Image 1 (cartoon, helix red, strand yellow):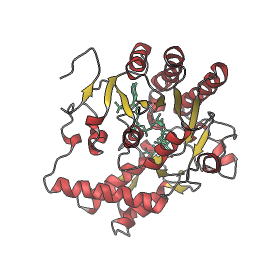
Image 2 (cartoon, protein in one colour):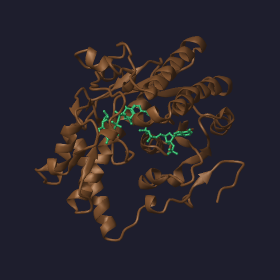
Image 3 (cartoon, protein in one colour):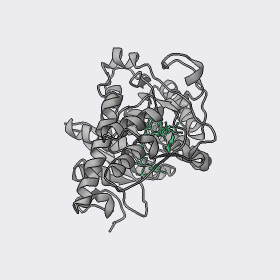
Length: 353
Ligand code: NAP
Ligand code: F7E
């Protein structure tokens, strides 16, 4: 019999790619989603897998809904991806960020401990936990480096990371922390800088926009390709013993380099003509540079990034270009008319329209 997996946050970038991967591997996939006023299944529709997932309503701060989800899914593997994931917004909503990301993770771990303690659990940790360490250590960061978080988001994730380690040691549970550096794709949310750039550059090249408004373009990040990172998550749960791993590319590039490369993809040299620096888009604190050392994942998991910076930007810009060209030709997309897809299978006591 195939394995069963529960993915929290299946409507997000990673949740959608991971669901696709697990379905291809023959898993029975259960995914949690939360009630929002505008249904948000466009990524799963984009990947053509809405009818292959069992959906369970679940709000991360409500333990009763997590308990129900685990009882329905009876998972062998739990991928806990749901989070308030936007660093900028964590300065606006620090308390909600802690509730969703930290308490939410405590809820997942405690519910698994009580209901299905043998299930393997993946916790979505992040390079943001390193914060200031990124410029104090003058080399790519390793799993054992110290953490100096610089945002409420980073603190919320660091606490979640430690909860994962505590549950692993205290209760002998299979819990892993995936310390993932930035990973991007055409399914990235539009507020993240990479997709904001690829989308706006595509529009500019088609005459649909005139400017690209950005904040701190000197910041450097280690950007990889999301479908490869969800494969790394899966590998982490296939090991004999649980452990924590960094996934990264080992290269950092600035936001400015991303901009220049994106304009290059559409054949525009005078990129400075379109870019407006807006002080309102600067964060109260910003991590200047993050680079990860993925050698442990390479050695123990056999994981290695394939898509590097230049190709990543090309993939993202070309996909946004295609979308806007198709839109200009009258084609409409799931996000133009967000509805509960008719082929969706929702497992709940409540009937949804
Ligand atoms: P994302 O696209 O923002 O997706 C986040 C998911 O969490 C969405 O499905 C969202 O639902 C759900 N969610 C948010 N608040 C919730 C709540 N209160 N209750 C239930 N569900 C909630 O994030 P991602 O890029 O896929 O990242 C996946 C995970 O990895 C996150 O935990 C993130 O912090 C972490 N991470 C990401 C990166 C990266 O570069 N992408 C790097 C390191 C770590 P809606 O669709 O309804 O909003
Ligand atoms: O910012 C700068 C911004 O929002 C990257 C999340 O997935 O990765 C992500 O967090 C950099 C920052 O991602 C704009 O100040 C300049 O220095 O795309 P971002 P992030 O903050 O690195 C980590 C690993 C996660 O865990 C998170 O969940 O770009 N920047 N101008 C801008 N950023 C945004 N968003 N918008 C701008 O206009």
